[in-house]
Length: 158
Ligand SMILES: [Zn+2]
Ligand SMILES: [Zn+2]
Image 1 (cartoon, rainbow, N blue to C red):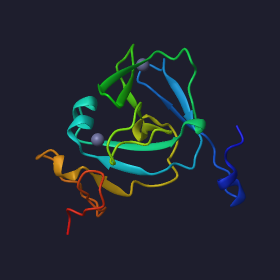
Image 2 (image 1 turned 180 degrees about the horizontal axis):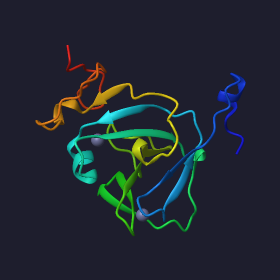
Image 3 (image 1 turned 90 degrees about the vertical axis):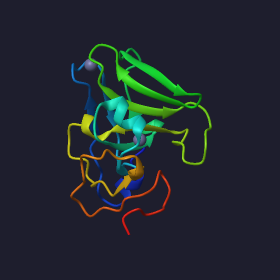
Image 4 (image 1 turned 30 degrees about the horizontal axis):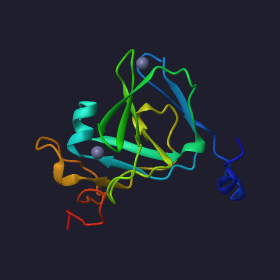
């Protein structure tokens, strides 16, 4: 893979990040740089992962690698979104757009990956809370990161 030119040119060639599910049957790698890291509080993420929020990152498809026989199942929650999970242990790790949706939809050329599935340090910190209006009532993030409505730029914390 020779797609790390952007990082390489800055003299900071980045090592791949390794991800896996709970049982280890699904393994994949991401080649940084990551597009973003953010905490999503939307109801879909919460229900899919059984968690108060989900921390996501993404890379272009050509910097995501997973064996073609990895036991990943895809749940299609709408005509344009799929959620990827291990069919053996149920770990939810992946998210992708399979058709054009609305303006806030994920990008068609990206694989979205849960940061918590990755083994190594991310190399960049989460920068924002998104869909903060859908957050649970019983957890308040203690950080000073901006909190946005949906995936828009509208701030809810000022
Ligand atoms: Zn598994
Ligand atoms: Zn979400």
